[in-house]
Image 1 (cartoon, rainbow, N blue to C red):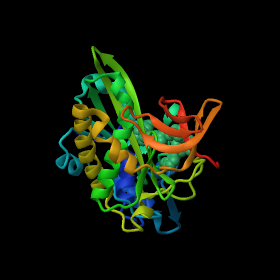
Image 2 (image 1 turned 120 degrees about the vertical axis):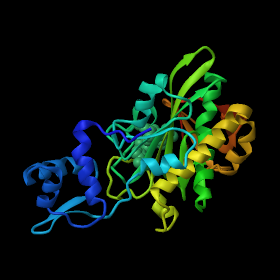
Image 3 (image 1 turned 180 degrees about the vertical axis):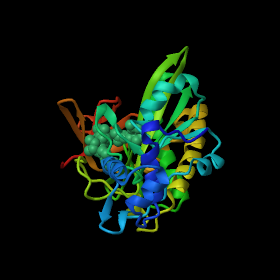
Image 4 (image 1 turned 30 degrees about the horizontal axis):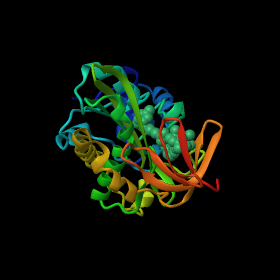
Length: 326
Ligand code: ATP
Ligand code: BTN
């Protein structure tokens, strides 16, 4: 598998590669390197800035990125992964790409991006995806057990993400039902499972993850507390390429286990990682709210709520969990 860049993005990606060292590069030098005028370079830089990269210009010195960035390296990731990996640096959505292409792909294949123009969360909400700051990737998975087993997938992947991050030394990573990864009560990552179709019994699923790594705190459009891997590692953040490699290995292991044994092996571990265990929470379902104490998940992947009526189990894609006092 290779790195794929759409024609209109080739020059912009080359400029980013040059600037990724965090040094100054003059418009003239960039122009010479890429066979175009300084004015053309300036136009490309303006477009790149809209992807969330903080590039500024100093008279007489040229362009510089506010921080050097480690770009994703397709061959490095591929060498350490068992499944095919495509790097498409600039994309609308890695989930949408695999949903469109899953017919031609093998189960387990992966698409990774540096920037998503239309990154999405559940129910069509935006997933903020600035260039090079975070990780965005998706895996196509053919689940022979069928659609009914798909519910547990985002829970299984949550466990896999914790496993992968812990293998790199992360501590205190928690889960929020059904699809969020938390650290110190803030959202670190989100998982989105979507289905591209069914053939016979098998369900064709795409599992995507957005994981914040160095995202700028000035980012707008996020209406809840969120955090970065940088905070988790207190500045000593592992390389982005190594994070992808560790996570893909963990995903592959957990998905294979899920395929053979279902949720049974994962329930206990998920419950140990539950950010809201024994806390007062509410479940929001359209305009209905149910209050209770969070008791983790059952073997179907439903969330258990201890209420005045006793223990109740809730399951379904339209439910949002919140702390009771917000
Ligand atoms: P729930 O899944 O419980 O309904 P949620 O608020 O986590 O609630 P999601 O659809 O899972 O909703 O995630 C999308 C939301 O995540 C967005 O509405 C925004 O508030 C937030 N968000 C968007 N981008 C990011 C990001 N990069 N990091 C953290 N949070 C983000
Ligand atoms: C959520 O918390 O709602 C889930 C967010 C999932 C975001 C990831 S980023 C990679 C993949 N592509 C998308 O468009 N969304 C998912």
